[in-house]
Length: 171
Image (cartoon, rainbow, N blue to C red; front, side):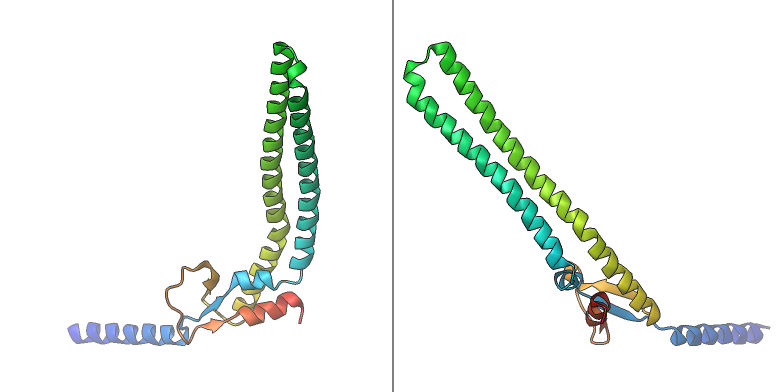
């Protein structure tokens, strides 16, 4: 009875080992940052961001010029002001300075948000192409080496970056 049980366990173990040997792990890697940098849509995205940034910079520079002019005017005429008018003008200049700071912070945040909004379709397409290629070639895992979290890449690991780059460029 024990021999029959032991023989059955050995057969099951052999079948399980053969099954696993037929479906080995297939691991690949990509460099997503490289794919983003080489994406054909990136240039048009950067053009949009640069234009919006330039427009915001122009407004900022106008605000600075107005502020500097107000300071110069105040310094030139302050001797003729009463204490009340002097205090009022100083408060106006201070408020103007705070508005400039608020505008600058808001503009920077808007540019960051706009950049994220525009780059999301690029990441979505890259991830879709990685999934398509990995699925078609039966990869178990695909690691992103640009994240810097991969401690070792085996020579057997396939670099899918060129394949994904061809797919996103439509080649």
